Length: 207
Image 1 (cartoon, one colour):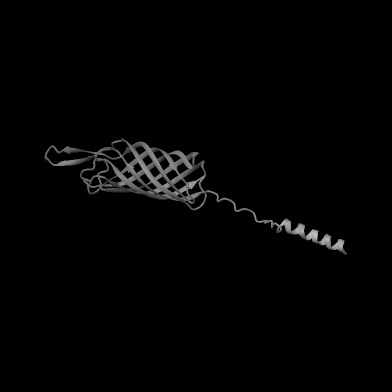
Image 2: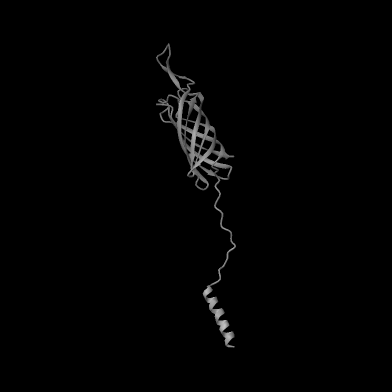
């Protein structure tokens, strides 16, 4: 009897030193959220644009109006990623419909074709971005001519192509991995009394 009691006490003491039983969880760890922005992807964007000249139309020497409206299409390829910043390059084609104020019935199309370098930083579904581009603006410009019979000055429409450069900043919100909404502000620098700024909204398609 003493031997049995000693055996039971020794088992009890071993159990107390072993501590509580460890509970093993079979719950799988929560996976990290997948970014909707790929570090290497091809984008095609379509925009509507409102453009306003810095100078009043009487002083502006290119568009010849206070404002113009139009659209643009852009293609970009993001090829690199550095510390979360995604870098790419592309081309942007804009077409603006300008009501030429010195001639009340006049109108003309102003176009730009720009090459761009772009950097964006995805944060969740958002990706703020900046770009810098350079290229050609065409379809605008004017010169003053004096009538032979009267001293009244008349604006002469020209199709004067010039070099232009354009910094821009915007943000994209991804609805899915392949579709996003864009909002952007641009500055178009053509030269003194020829500059303008624009606001764009549009859709982006990623592949």
